[in-house]
Image 1 (cartoon, one colour):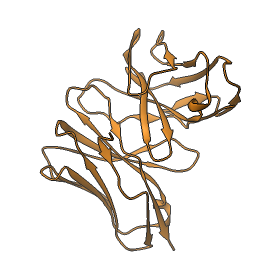
Image 2 (spheres, rainbow over the protein chains, first blue to last red; image 1 turned 180 degrees about the vertical axis):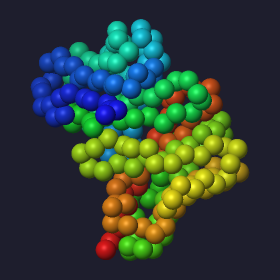
Image 3 (tube, rainbow over the protein chains, first blue to last red; image 1 turned 180 degrees about the horizontal axis):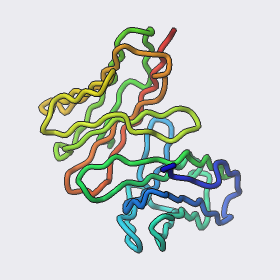
Length: 114
Length: 113
């Protein structure tokens, strides 16, 4: 089954404790992206990657890091989480070739930073 | 400032009637638009799209209309069904921005039986 998986689905942590949210896709997509969803703001892009070892900042990259060492994986790293990073996070992937392509989203990770 | 706006946070419609969800954008360089549907505890799923060279695209009960001069698009669902109850996101992108879409804040649709 074609899918994007994220782990963990729910996480409660404390300020300053480094964490990683994993994302994996099995569709051989070149493009992967991380979003956060906050009430009234919709989905805002954090980072994206157009292929292995190619990453770039989205609209709200502060406080986040990413890496793309393999095509299927795109982890989101919070080196020192703060309460304003409490949010619902989505990973997405899509093809790059062929013009406009819709993104496939993972199920989401709800993060609470105390 | 938000480039993609959905000014109605919520909408309630009776089953069988038409649902109309609206989206406005400010960036005149946007040339491709999509609608996503999101159920609770799930990620958004693609619903329908439209390119700026068209003014209408239809897929079953779902039709998207684009008015470029007004920078406005709308999603029509006819007839509405209880299973359509979800949050709907409008998204847009410029042609040269890879796959980077800008999303609106979403509209929660409730279809009442």
